[in-house]
Image (cartoon, rainbow, N blue to C red; front, side, top):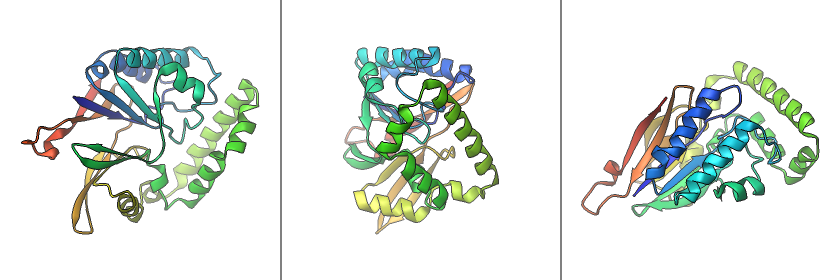
Length: 249
């Protein structure tokens, strides 16, 4: 059976082609899997489960159809959609994943993360992250009207884009020592994350053992990518159990 991993779709009404690409993926390729993991930033902004825009309703319905078909779907908050709440998970049938989550594939301990916690060279972002993940701050935001929330989210995106434009490129990537520390802490030999938009496979040597860091790709209008795990027979190398597939419009 196959397990699929995606992240960083950044769905928004301004990116209808990416929305269509995901809807086709959920109705097609994803139906042949046992489980789909979405590791954060499914949406470019989520301002509350009561935001019933046509795009949000479309995506919720497509996820519900996927889970109703028998495919499990597990979703992790990202730095853009951390306000996905109980109503969203109830309506879609998706399982909520904590960040990080430790699981196993072919017996190998595998750590799933969004990835932003590993960007420790950017202390300003980490401070902001801690503040907006505070439950009281979130409740105060959700008490505001939808119009106010939309305006605040748009202002945040503007400021975030301006700040990132002047940051050194390196500090927006993961810190290698943070990666090693989290793999050590959880005893994992594989780390799968998104967030950085730098898809690649990295080999890491930790305490005499080999570990792998798989970075998921950002989805664009005409192309996405999915990391695929196929349960390996005992006679098959676990390396052969992992591959990447393009999702093309």
